[in-house]
Length: 374
Image (cartoon, rainbow, N blue to C red; front, side, top):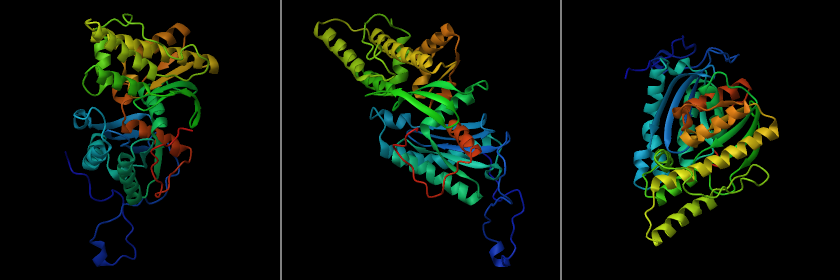
C-alpha cells in the first residue's frame, strides 16, 4: 500500500506562529465551513458495533468508492459465538489499517473528506467505543463534522446503496443476529416500528439451531447451505404467531420444536436428515416473515419492500420475499451480500443523510449499546 500525504493539499494559515513552531506537525483545518452537502460529498463511515471492522468512503450518499471489511469470524469460531472482549481488542488492532486501506481504494486522503460517521449503537459497548473514538479523533483533527449513526438505521440505508431506484416510503424488514423488526419508513429519519420479535431474533434462532445440529459457526450460512440439499416440506415445524393480529413474531417455540423433533427421532433410533431439518426450519422462518411483511404492506398501503440486515443474505428469505412481492406487483429491494453484513458503507450513507438534515454529533457524544431506532 502507498503512503498517505502528511499535510493537507491546501495552504495552512501559520500567521502568528513562530519559526520554531512551524517545523512541527501541522493541523489540517478547512479554510471555511462546508455550506452544502451535494453529490460530490465524501463521507468516511466506520462500523465496529460487533464482530466486523469496516471503513468505507461513500460519495454523495449513494456511490461506494471503497468498502473494506475485516471479519473476526475465525477468532470467535472456537467459542461458538462472539466474545465481546476479543471483539473489542481486534477492532483496536485493525481499525486504523482498515481506514487507511479504504482511503487508498477510494483514491482519497483524509483532507478530501467532508464528514466522518461512526456507529453509535446499538452493539457491544467495547466495540462501539473503538470506532467512535477514532471517528471523533479524525473529525477533530480535520475540523469536519462527526455524526453518530444508529446501526439499525444504517442497515435501512444499505437498500439505497444496493439499488439507485430505491425510494421512500417503504415497508422494511430488518432482520439480523440481534434484531428482527418490521418498520414503516416514511422518509429520512421518519420511522414507525410496526412489530418485532418477542423473544429470539431470527439470526439468534439460526445460530442456536445450527449449534444444536453440530454445524460450524456462524450457523446462519451453514443452515442456508444445507437447506439447498434438503426438503423444506419434510417436517411440519410450527409457524408461531403467524395468524395472530399485529406484526410481532416469535422464534423460541420454533427453535424448541426443532430440538424436540431431533431428540425424539434419535430416541426412537431413527436416522435424522440434517438437510431436511435445516430446510424445514428455514422454510418456517421464511413463511413467518413473508406473511408478516405482507400484512405490514396491507396495513400501510405500501408499494415497496426493503429487506436488510445480516439475515437478508439468506437465500430462502430473499427468494420467498421477492416472489411474494412479484405476486402483488410490489417493488422489492435487497442489498448485495456484502452490504447485508455490518459494513462501513451503510454507515457513511446514513451519516450523509443525517448531515444533509443538519444532524451533527458533539465530540463528547457517548456510544449507547441499547440505542433505539426511534
